[in-house]
View (cartoon, rainbow, N blue to C red):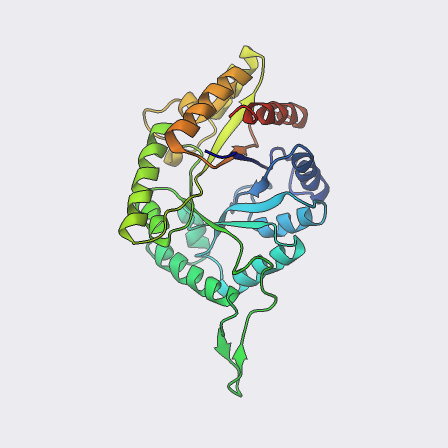
Length: 311
């Protein structure tokens, strides 16, 4: 097992999205040595919704130099594939090839209703759009003009043939589709270690059945908070237990089954278990924890990097 790459999501937000606040977090993450800085996608909530993660990451690109910029679930079914391909290529250009594109289908029926997309069509649309995007990034003609001349995407991504693509998947059908693509699979942060163990076995079985090359990248996203205070740890666990939507929860799981909250020794023990049982290559520490301010989260991240050195 080689070195595990440790990443973070954006962690705090006052109200709405402000470039300076977001970029400061990315600069801190870069200075601490984190591998990548991740944003999810969400729609029709409140000012904390992230309907356009690549736009926010574009602002980060101008204030950072090394850290990789990544989306956990850029939702393909609700987008035109050529416009999506252009946006990804532009971000890859802006960042000089520092993009990981995590793609997903989405799970909110209200979002599909708003975008006039039938839920049952999301997987078919996802696969078709991804195929179009990958062909466009290869420089293949996407259409012809009136004179019969080929129309091709421009600019193309810096990374060839395109940025790394990871597939966010939740549920057996999504997991099967991810495996059939032979692309790294990113699980829900609310699934337990035992569930992840079964998911990754199923995923790898699908990859083999599809006669694809083994997928060497095994990422895991966890809600992580490291503190010396037992009372603070318990308060955070209590708030996290109430923060996950029922649709994302496992019926018999408690908060310790899908989070890592406690002191450095506890974090090292839990993360070592993830390494042993899953063979993880990338750890993404999820932020935006209820009740945790910027100073406390930064301190937790500092201790996480200390723990990661011992894995």
